Image (cartoon, rainbow, N blue to C red; front, side, top):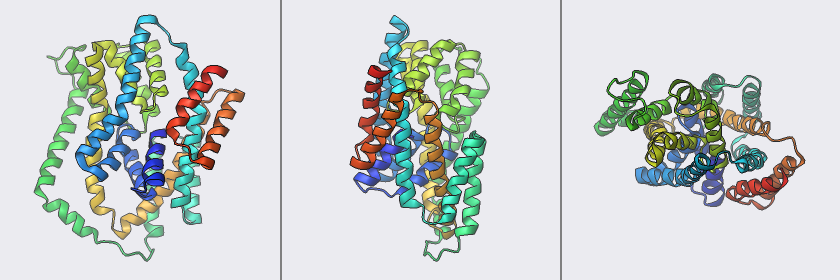
Length: 374
């Protein structure tokens, strides 16, 4: 979510390249698809602005700094053991991240929420997520809000393009159909290879490393933190590539970098096959969801201008705002009970709301502050 906050701040608030509605549509679509939201939302935005090459460059730019940090920390960890500084940095990050998410949710809310019904949608979504939580509740919130939005907001007197033209464009665009079918075959093949072991591929081979993380990437619904138990079960309990202590360290490293938490797989890949293993694991975990987002966004862009789809999206956008607010609370609950946590949280909110300081400076500053006070 902090990466999404930066996307919103740069693309909407600073450069006016996109609208809040477009970003929220990307978040909604990313919620329904597997993979880290930071990467899939980045793909959604950059593909719209600069096509396939733009999406590729943006994702590499998003992942590369975090990848280099994790690999560097991994080398140090495997050579010298535990890194206590990581914990102090992470403790400082948590309240700052919570403040950033609140700031993002507020920007979305003031530009998107227009009436009491939408406010109610957001409150109910946040309450369900905080009270029950889980991936299936998130899916229920998204789908039900779309259905309710269709019936509640469809009476809005707005002129929209006929969606049948977009659907006809999909049906009769042979190139798109071929690409779509090849992509489906590719995704199904990854899942089959992941679920059904291939006898000729050794468990500790580079090929198995690629198959494991690429197949796993298509099952990672609900965001990074939700998917950690699945990854742990496979790489620790089933394959034994890392120990429990090493896995926790990998997650901590992923948390302290500015990119998606799934960059933690670089630690696992490095432990198994060195630098090449780190590269394989990272590409495998991020590439399939990125490709899936491109395909989904193509279909989404064809049909989103219909009055019915816009009504459904109006309901979905409202609950996404509520989900973002709930995410801020969930993250904040992990903050250390310390006076410094409150200071970081309040100062971060003030500098963002009052001076619109770029969030890219807030997280490292909070981590450095944490090194001295915790």
